[in-house]
Length: 469
Image (cartoon, rainbow, N blue to C red; front, side, top):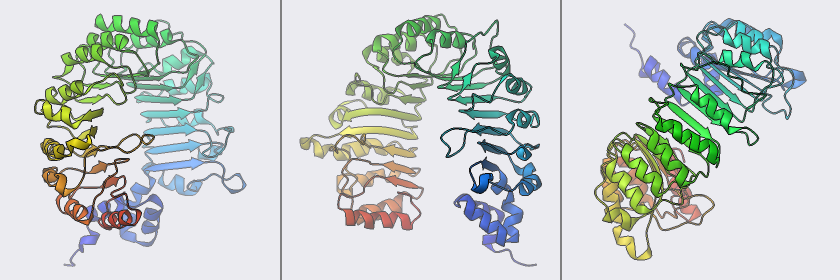
């Protein structure tokens, strides 16, 4: 019996393939029969076809190769003026993306997206961007026949013809994303979108936000809502009244933006029955909103309060001392003194933490105490202490052993560290310590030392172990 070399084991080969760029993977399967047999499906799983090649040829696989391997294609991206011969049946296609040329300033005539839709009824996800002039009523009628379609994502799209046909196409969706997309009108008729669980509306400035709210009202089973409308008091007050009435009993994830005042956010947060994920980034979230949020502390799993100028350290500390089920947390700046003077953290299930911890010159002796707090977050995978790139470096957590870095040996799951604009002064001993104790570390973003030559040496030490910088 011939012994199998470890490098020839399927699990080993799939592991290696995970780290290869697609063009490198193609080269491998071309020269190795075993790789071809096992990994061919990875090459064809996602296919991109675009116009703009030499002499107007499409960029992507040849038509003959595509026909031969089309059963392996699960995701297809079609850009620009693709010849009609690329319109074919893909038996296992589940995701289709239609877009303009990858480099062209103006899109040219797309092959025939309607035919491509009709030939592939297995589609579950459809993404379209910047193709409004080509997608008329026949196209949306074809989309409405896709019985398995679950999500539709429209970006910079205009729907001006037979709007009723478009809403029929949306009738059985579970996810709808409308980003900077315009509609000639929003004649919903008597339609209710009872299957819709996730809705994203990123508004155009010229749109009537009351029409957005009317669409939201027609989705009674929403579980996730993202609505970027800006400071629109009338629409926001109406939305608050509807949440208080319990119109969306399943709504658990809410993302609103931007620059919405505290007095408008508070009633909305208070009206929702049970929030598990809340994103108030870049808003006026303050005392009123925080009081409403306290009701949801027992159920919060994800919370984003970045760039909310009305927040104070005491509020941020209260979140970390009260929300025991938090998995992901993004918050603003907080002083080391506020942390030390607060109650012990209970958010020990955190996997992602973005926090800017500030130290005064006289508070450097608090560094070990902050490291001790962090050491209890044993499930942490991502730690981000970066400061916004447009701001000057400040005194923050010092990733040196003498300051307490060694206490973070308990973070066995850590994969990503971000320290942008934090003026770190790591030495080789700190990098060696990280390599020894953080076996799963995959990426370290930001300068390790302010000395350019020393920083290059430290970066090379990380890269030699496969850690990206």
